[in-house]
Length: 213
Image (cartoon, rainbow, N blue to C red; front, side):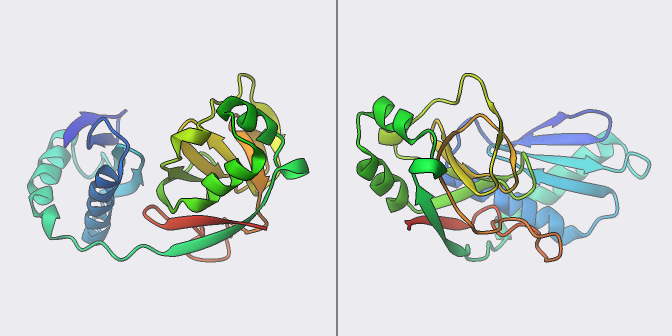
């Protein structure tokens, strides 16, 4: 793990330079371990693909002391037990009015629509991170056969529930939002609900399979 300062009250912990399941597992262990400590000087912990960002209360501790604490405590991280991931099936309307970029993905990949749908829905994806907008899951890893670049000019908005591709990732827009990903379908599943806990349906480490409808 590589520790670096991030602003006045942040520490970025880098776990490697690749996005893969093992890195995700180590980040989850680190995240769960820090959450279990219930320390007053930890304000927030934000996991992502290759790192974890920790905001600390710099009125309660200094950067150097906080780094020393992290390095000492994380020696015990190997003992952390990761709970079994939750599995979700997400029904999706593919193509047509719901998938304005399906034609592009077919052309770019050299596949027909049925093949793109079959490939996209045959994979069990891992949620690597949740963010960008509340509840938006970054999932991987996408089959290279349906790899698609981002839009050169992002759309000003796409509907809530839009299912998109970007390079080797897939995701679901949890709210109406600007979007630079290739939209191939739409789901009616609600991904974020502020009246429930956790607010986001999908959490880091969860498993997701798309079901064509």
